Image 1 (cartoon, rainbow, N blue to C red):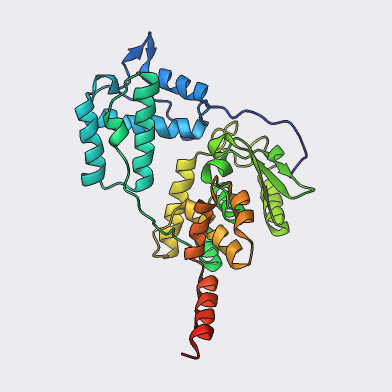
Image 2 (image 1 turned 180 degrees about the vertical axis):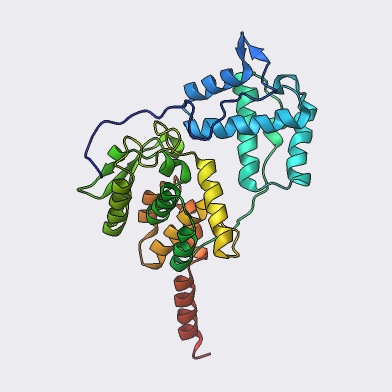
Length: 314
């Protein structure tokens, strides 16, 4: 399945599986003759943002345009303020969703349109430490067993077995795998960083069997079935996971990203140190990784045992 190659290929932003190629109905305004949407995309490319981040930012700006049924270029600062209040007080979006909208809109107005509005300096998401949803290994097996599509099932399996982000997994190429060292090279990930992620012998065997069953696809490990020249889309994988979660009868409000959290928690419970987990996950800060210390059952049990020993003579 996995060939050793040193060359890397830049990911394309062309039409991918599940993409309708639409620019949206409110993107007709232009900057120097170029549509506002296209100008923003070009600015993001020049700024070095990943293709995935570009797509997320464009969708966030679309939400603003739809809210007022107007091009963002025609929206006033007060309207922008009201939009953020709407996200906070009415839609009650999550902190992560709020951050995405803030960063996307801030980029549009400050970088593309060149408007330095004070409201963009005072808008901040509420700070909250929310513990992630964690699945046990048996729960993961149950959920994944309800994914009927072979490509989606194996992609979700790999996300759990290696702790990958969904954007990293769907775009994996065959030559991203080093079979001799059992390493996956994750290219141009969050923050534009590359990293190496180890995988187990069992994971290798699962992927090899899948690859052969799929007729040895190339270059994508998880090609789109209708457009094999492109890889599968993240949003279709999310739908498959959500359907499998419901069908499995699991009552947790988990998402595909919960598989990554579950992997990290399992490593911590097996004694892998935080620094190693940080490197594997590609976290920029150890603080991000340390959240898993709050949710590991084994560590909680060991802590209680130590407390019992300490307080036994009281």
